[in-house]
Image (cartoon, rainbow over all chains, first blue to last red; front, side, top):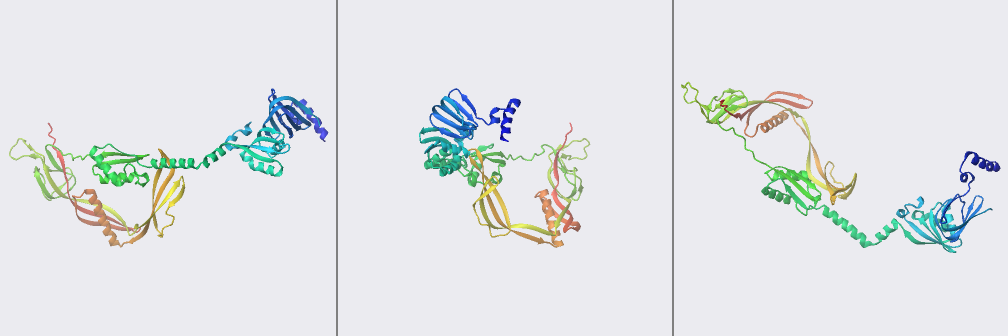
Length: 93
Length: 400
């Protein structure tokens, strides 16, 4: 049953041009230069410090590194990070 | 960012979390639906962030369930500012006092203006006003309503024909009209005296002119009673007159027919003189009793309400003082017999006629022409004989 659902997702996406992040429940990351990162659809905060932010997502983790990090806003499934970003990294499970 | 908009108005706090992995505390907050912003890691075991004042209960709840140490390090927003000000008692007392002072001053009469009348009457009016208690520095809500003052003034200052009183905020404006006593216009020059009503002449006093009628003559309205044309010698054929202004008084008997109805039963209310006053503060429709809480111990009550407006500077406040005067009343029921009713009817008709004709007329006799009793009422048709002066002056048109 699950396999069927997983298969129909990419099919719908390709043929009906639906937004990918909604269909596959993947995180949407918006970056403004080096200073802002806006992450939607994440599944929770794992690590946060001055230089590192690690978020859980549907399939693995997102790790953002940099310096002088401030979480400008935190909402369920949304985070706005401010600071000097040097790296965005996907770590699979 | 719209989630944290307006947080200054509702108030927000900066909290400091201490413990292992302090950022996870904020994750708990988010799971509970609390908005958190400006999260900053201060050190390895400390993290600070902003939360709304309205979320404080949920925050304390989370704190109880976890082992973090929570401290409030900063409080911002209007609720805190307000608290800060109210804590300073001197400021609040001063503010309250100044508002009260302005309120009191707004309800004092600062100026009494009298317009439209000459100086001497103005002085008289202002003297009367002082007697009523209307002067500079008087409280507005101890005064009578303008309509009453108006009536009193007209009664007490005979020179006034009319006076308009109105209160404009803190000034009392009186607009007066002086009574100019206009003398009845007398017809100058030669004139006749003619009858105004039909009647039978009873008495004649002619001081000037030639009487054309005699006592016991019946006259019609417009008929010449005393002529201003004097013709001393009848034998003269040529019409040569001496023209004079006729003067005199002709008393004639005139007749009137009037109709009156008098009920056999009459109800009226009498005030016994026992009364109590109550004061209310009314805000829109709501009335708050201020003075006089007990209800009076009489049953039949006549209520009289006086409303007084309160002012703040020039604005009328929505708050009013309402004085209610409760007076005891007594119902009086009168039952009359037919004869009594007739007597009263006659008296009533006489009074009415006298009022209509003026004080000079004299009602000589009255006669009941017809009487019927219908629906508990006596209906009378009366015939009255009156002696009155029927003279009217009319100038002689000299033609050429």
